[in-house]
Image (cartoon, rainbow, N blue to C red; front, side, top):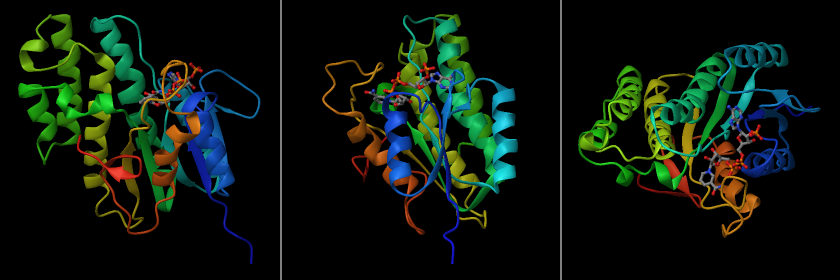
Length: 250
Ligand SMILES: NC(=O)c1ccc[n+]([C@@H]2O[C@H](COP(=O)([O-])OP(=O)(O)OC[C@H]3O[C@@H](n4cnc5c(N)ncnc54)[C@H](OP(=O)(O)O)[C@@H]3O)[C@@H](O)[C@H]2O)c1
């Protein structure tokens, strides 16, 4: 009997934590399609902000017979802080992960796993007041979450975001949104017969171009929890936020 193919897509897999996640998933026996924003040999070209790249990947996965694991690892942190930076940051870290996940969901096989590489900067303690309370609403819908993220950009442009409890940090807000999206997706998928699990991971502070050279963790250490979530057995947790293979508060 032949073992069924298990296919994984890892975004931002050309370097850093994504490269390590792709390697460790391959070591675990999965067929990995590593994705890179710039065209490279052996990689799927995928800028998560480009709908035509997402569409091409979706078509390819259908032709391959479906997807088992999606790791939304691609992320960016831009210098400075204004409405333009807020928009660009949300486009990659929040909307990029959301649109890719939504587009690939129909191609996901029973038992598929979705992992969002988030950050401790996405913990709700970075926000306060109304901005934080909205994220915490247990019945928050997809539409309300998107509107909340859009209100952040509008309020930064009007220079009144701090009054509602938003931090002056677009990266942090993008990851709060990603953590909230995991909960929304888990609820949306609760009745799906494919029993797909969706979770977020904080890799810790990792030595990469983003994390810098002083970070205490190697890329393999940073990849550990995302890989663990990608390989969760049936009946595993969903809608959670994890660091070092343990659930953490967000
Ligand atoms: N390092 C840390 O301490 C740390 C801590 C917490 C969370 N994280 C998260 O871990 C993830 C990986 O970060 P890293 O530390 O490995 O950073 P990194 O070395 O800067 O790698 C980021 C990766 O994301 C890709 N990327 C950026 N914009 C993209 C886009 N629009 N479309 C597709 N790919 C895009 C980059 O591609 P290019 O090479 O083309 O730029 C690169 O492959 C990120 O989500 C980050 O927020 C990192």
